[in-house]
Length: 235
Image (cartoon, rainbow, N blue to C red; front, side, top):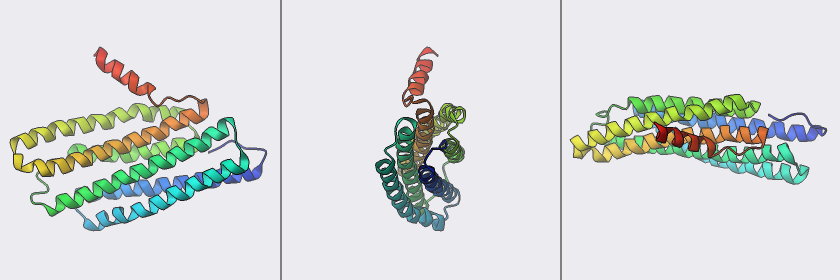
């Protein structure tokens, strides 16, 4: 993740942080995969695995943030090194929140499975967006590990595809609920799941944005959103 420093211990500290952060990222990816699989199969074992895994993610967030604070206190980093540590802390927060979204998906899946006619709604868009969200998070973590701004910028652009799947599903869901008011409760559960997947994509995008911040010292968190809004208004 970082460049080499005069202090080999500082390099060791940063390497350990990188390993722990990527380990947390791997657990989040697993949580998302299990949550989407549970939605496809209504496997309650997977649901419980995701719900239980959330506790481990919370503990990892606290451990890594504490280590980041200790490194800052010991090394008093400046410039890019300080940006890196700040970005790592934000990355951990985004990973924990992505894990929260996976837990929401699992809990809503359990609720849907307990109802009747759980498979009545075609959830093709949810499945597609779930796979996309998991993939983009993996790519964001890889970009963070390598500090690859080119990959990070592509991830930021690709976030729109997940949003498009979400909007397509919402349109279909609204039509479905209007045609059958008895399905509103179940439809809302699926809506919450679709929104959770969209939020996972947003957290992955936040991680990608932090890569640009570390390397270039430029905060681009709102720039691409403004550009997107401008393009929509022009079309």
